[in-house]
Every structure is written in C-alpha cells, then in structure tokens.
Image (tube, rainbow, N blue to C red; front, side):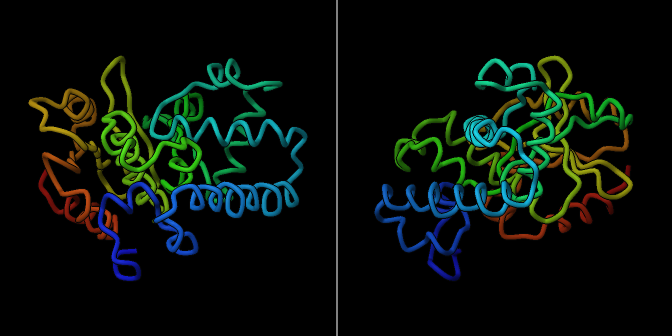
Length: 250
C-alpha cells in the first residue's frame, strides 16, 4: 500500500490493505460504504452463504459485526450468546467463526497450551483479517480513532495479528488470570511470544514474564514502542522474526 498509494503507517493501520478501496479514503463515508456493502456484504452473501449450509444467516452477520467490534479481545462464547439475538448455542457460534475464518474475514484464536484439548476448550481471541473491516464496522473517523488510546491500540494489535495470520502462521494467544500475551507463534522448536505496545513505554511486561517462566524455551518479542517498530514488523515477512528467535540460544 505504501508503494502503490504512498500510504504511511497511520493510514494503513486504519484503512487496511484493500487496493480497491484506496481511492476512496479521502471521503471516509464513501470508503466505509464500499467496505460494508461491496466487500463485507458481498463476501457474506455470495461467497459464504451460497457455498455453505447456514441456517441462521442473520446470526452470522451479527457475529461478524461483534467480532469486528471486539477484534484483538478475548470473548467467551457464552458472553457472545448474551449479546446476540437468536444465538442458538456455542457450537453454532464456533462453527460460524470457522466459516468466517475460512472466508478470510474473522478468526477466533485459541489459547496456547501444550494440550490440544485445552486449546479447543478455550475462549477465542477474535481477530479480523484486515483492519479495514474493524474500522468500517466501528464507524469512528480516522482522527478520532487515532486519538483514542483504546481504539488505536486495538487497531495496531489487530494489524500485527492480521499480518501474522495472513501469512499462514499457526497463531495463538495466552492468558492466565490477568496476565496475557497478545500472540504466540507456535512455528519452530520454540514458541514465540509477541507483545504489541502501541502507546508509551511500559516499565514491566508481566504477561511476557509469566509466559517465559511457564514455557522455559519460549522467546519474547516486543513490537512497538519498546521493541521492533510496528512499520518494520508489518513490512517484513513474519518468518524473519521466527528465524531470528530460533537462532538465539535458550
């Protein structure tokens, strides 16, 4: 997007990476309509609903919007049930998340664990595959989003996660109590624990500390204010960081 349209980091994080919408970004209203109608609705109605047996298409649309609103956040299926109309059961929601993930729209990351059974039973961390989806659904203008630490922090974290996810990386999150790691890459001999810091420098990172104590062979990686610049991370293939961490001694 930088090479084709001259975009900087701020514009890319908000507007995402859909070239077809790039010429509309000067008019945010038109850009949002394009993403919602021409991209999201077309994908849902033509690519997904026509090719898969979906008994509750309205629920699928609600779930997608909820996923955009909560992108980069952990949300249990039971909590989703409380926010969706005619939600059915958790099995239906989990199946719909899988369909959305296969369509390249929204995934539910599992919690990293040595046990695959525990991974499947975990609450998902919702993550859109492109920040444009999140920005369009939220409907918050760029400048307002940029000055809101909560919204901008989640957009940055989503951009980092989407970059990893779209590369085919096996991606997880980790949480124990109030300690959390944003992303865990399970590729290679050692898990790579990634923490995204979009704001001011933090004096401590308890999530990373707890994770590396639990998984002694894990390697931490900071993206943002305290580590690799976000722009450098997003313009590099993810396996660059996996390989560099793999070469480090345990």
